[in-house]
Length: 315
Ligand SMILES: NC(=O)c1ccc[n+]([C@@H]2O[C@H](COP(=O)([O-])OP(=O)(O)OC[C@H]3O[C@@H](n4cnc5c(N)ncnc54)[C@H](O)[C@@H]3O)[C@@H](O)[C@H]2O)c1
Image (tube, rainbow, N blue to C red):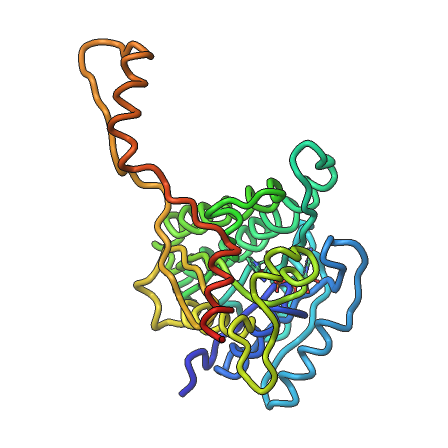
């Protein structure tokens, strides 16, 4: 019995990179897969059917079941059609992996309104769109006594969890996707649905072509050696989180890649100063803050440093 036997999964942006690996692995683990991909450039322009078609072909050639879908997750009505694609072809839906993504990096003072909106539309609105339609379907099914153990896995990023200059649009969306996973989990757990977020680290066109500094931190691919930065390293945790076995792991945020899975912890109080019965004087408050809060100040981790870990290990 494979991990995802009998499951139906939608993976958005599954025509390339990380989503492709997730689709291939989930299909190998028994899931029937909707391979959604608009097939555009990394900045979100253009479209092509061939990335999704190729992945469906690969899955079918390996004996799995898959169907292609070319809609944009950014469009609310189109997102509903992505869900209906699963229902029409496979009769139900269990798993949604919100993976589709684009990049339009600029420093804040140079970023156009369009660059901000386009990135938010695909990552944040697109993930909302998919979750909105799937959750209404799961809640309805739950009311009718049909327990589908729904699973949503959002794709976050160190850009949002740690911060990365030049990505105010992308990082804000990715931080929101981690928050969204926690909130959706709190809303949907009662219906048997879990939600988690995964921040990947992988060699894809998004890191090699779109963010050359991150790409360079990974080093070169060594011939005849498993690439430590292969997107295939991200898929296993996503695949497991999608399974029934993972029902008790929910509302969490992970980082995955380089053969490693990190459990991440975000906003939580680490220090406080308090005064009762009077309003703080700002100067006195500042002095106490400098003294007390220094202990809790954040160590600045960077995505490039984490990527470089993999390059060091492979030497
Ligand atoms: N590669 C990394 O190290 C890394 C790090 C952090 C986060 N991520 C995230 O992982 C996800 C996958 O990225 P990747 O690195 O595999 O990049 P990628 O560019 O190889 O793949 C993204 C896919 O999404 C598709 N897509 C874009 N807009 C779409 C839309 N509106 N509707 C449907 N499909 C659409 C693209 O056509 C593409 O095939 C993204 O959400 C990305 O932000 C990647």
